[in-house]
Image 1: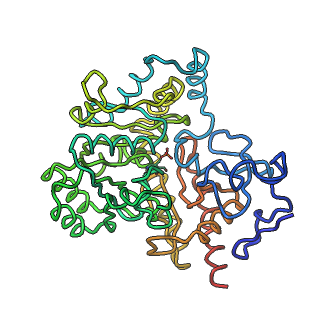
Image 2: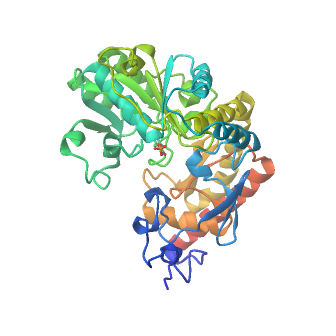
Image 3: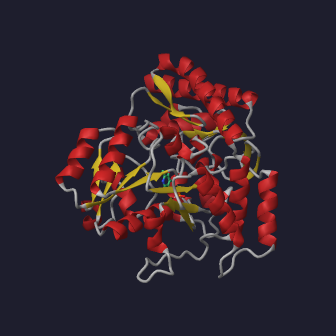
Amino acid sequence: MSTTNLGGLASAQTVTEDPHLRRGSRGFPLLPGGYGRSTYYTGAPSPYAVRGDGYRVWDDRGRELIDANNNFTSLIHGNAHPEIVEAATKALSEGSSWGIPNLYEWELADLLVSRLPALDQVRFTNSGTEAVMSAIRIARAATGRDKVIVTKGGYHGTSEVALVPGGPSYTRGVPQGVIDDVTAVPLNDTDFLRQAIESAPDAYAAIILDLLPNRAGLLRITEDFVRAARELATRHGVVLIIDEVISLRLGYNGFSGAYGVEPDLLTTGKLIGGGFPVGAVVGLGDLMAEVDPTRKGSLPHGGTFSGNPVSMAAGAVALRLYGPDQVERLTRLGDTAREAANARVADAGWEIRGSGSLLRAVPRGAEKVDEQTQHELWWASYDRGLLGSPANLLSLSTPMDDTVVNDLTERLVDAVLAVAASSRS
Ligand SMILES: Cc1ncc(COP(=O)(O)O)c(C=O)c1O
């Protein structure tokens, strides 16, 4: 029997039996720690999802939850959207994947490039992590340089280069040579960025930026910093990669479109697969030529399931259904929720950050939120029927309307106030 109680909050996390032990047929977890993804971890045995429908999810503890996790922001249309289910089922019934190209890839590529008109071509991957890995490799091959600039605390998946900005606790197992090739620039420190590049102008292959980094508590990258990155990259032949694995949802032309910055390569994933595994590098033709197999000496790039028809078909429907009107509607819903919640949590020393349909509650001014606080807020939210990500990132989905988002906001405020009160006591 295990009993867990985080931070003194009376909570559903108090369980009499550890489901991870119960499920292991030999009396111990069959998955490391009981988890199939480390990113599920919330400090205590997790409930299991049983079913989802629209903006709701039901778990094996009998709870109905407002799903603002949306599989880490992927489910822009919520759970089991009928048109996406239909498209995926049709593709599946035709054969789940093949060893020659399929036409669904063209359709999704066309939809992506029409939203990102400054870019020319797309290469699909199975995840955002792979998209970032591939983009960095393309940049290194094209420039003949090794070094990469990231922002401190930025998250770009779990490839070796991408782990470096997380600091020493993330880089165990990463070779020192990889760490040495990555320069982590403090968020929005334009002088640091300029100095780093100008001190070694021929060393840098790429700058990679997430314009709304979640690990930094959804603190926005300033326009000044982005402009400097674009200008330095152009001047010194560095490839500017904007990582829109999460942020693509924030504008019809992506978040970079909203900023008015044109990347050389853009990485994305999550929503563009309609809930199925996906990633993509979208880029300028001369860079994407690095993975053109008709060119002699091009980079090998594969992935048995890259561009599989189920992800492509579901993703195409998801993108079509997320037109300018829906982008605008979800943005307005998120902005209204943030404003209403901020007015209510300010006195407790918290704030709700984010942009449009992405929200996150953090102690006011924090650039990093400790894991225990994140977990306390996760459970406090769960207790109130609200499902966020373990780092408390909340995302809206198109099945939500004003009534649902008001309800979500109430639950969020209530959870934040409970955590704030418990930290004072
Ligand atoms: C900005 C960013 N880049 C890359 C990734 C990695 O994507 P994936 O989890 O699909 O590998 C993530 C995942 O959350 C992300 O937020």
